[in-house]
Image: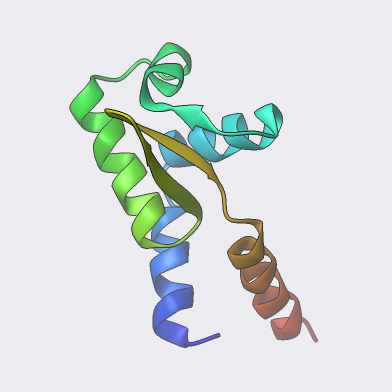
Length: 91
């Protein structure tokens, strides 16, 4: 994994709201819509969209358009690669 990618993921994970979004997606074990996420996190919709964009740009979540809404799901492959990189740092 490239260091730029690790940096982008680490920055995306450095916010409690984004961690809460990931935790919610993980607990659902399925996709969630922006409206589902706004029910969980007490933030305005534009703020939630900003957090979702950062998580999507870091490839931690996958965004798919469904009709007029976006649905989000975990990108377990990228999370596994990130964890593997961190484990490799361990001596």
